[in-house]
Length: 271
Image (cartoon, rainbow, N blue to C red):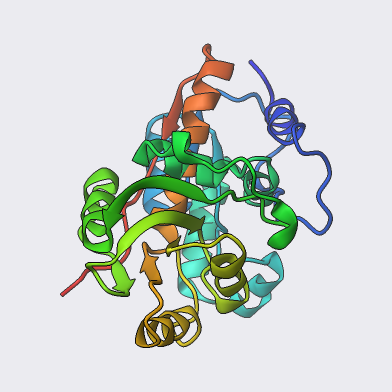
C-alpha cells in the first residue's frame, strides 16, 4: 500500500513548491500506509465520520479544518468546545488529513474551475487566447458560450449543479455569451471589475465576494445601459465540483484503493 507521503508527493509534484502554502498535512503521520482515500471540499465532522465508517484513512480536503484560511487562527480557538470536540475525533480516529487548496488553484489550468466546467459541459467553450497576466496568479480563461438570456443561464446553472437558488444582479432578459468564472472568494471588485473590461465579459459567475463591491458595480453598469451581470453561486458550490473531479482522477491513479468523494451538502437553508 502507498504511504501518505507517497500520495501527497504525487499530488503536489505537478506544480512544485508554493511559497507560504496552506497545503500541508494537518493530522496523522506521513509514514502511515493508506487503506482508502476520501476527497472532500469541506472536512466537516460529518465527512470525517463517513471516512472513518468507510475505512478511508487519508482525507484530502480543499478547505481548512478549523474555520479560517490560515492555521495560525487556531490560537483563538483555545478552550472552544467545538474545536476540542472535532480535534478529539480526529486524534482518536488516527486519520491523516491533507489540505489541498493552493495547488488546485495554481495548477494550469485551475483544477477547481475545470471541475465546474466539466459539470456544466462547458469545457469546449474555453477561450484559449486569454493571457493570465491580467489576473495574476489566477489562470482562468473566459468562455464564449452559445448566446442565451441571463434568466436561461440561471436556470441552466440550477439544473446542472442541482442547486435550489443562485443570487443574481442584472437584467434577466439580457443576452449573454462572454462568461468569466471566478470560484471561491474571488468575487471581489479587485478581480471582477478588470476581468469584465479586459475580457469583454457579459457575466461573471463567482463563488462569493463583498456585497458592496461587484454587485454595486454591476447595478451601476445596468443603470448606464451597459449589459453586465453577476451571478453568485456560493463558495462551496463554485468549488466542490473541482474536488469531485480530483476524486475521479485519483480513482484512476490508485485503482487498488477505494477512493470516494464525500460531501456534507451546503450549510445554508433558504427560508
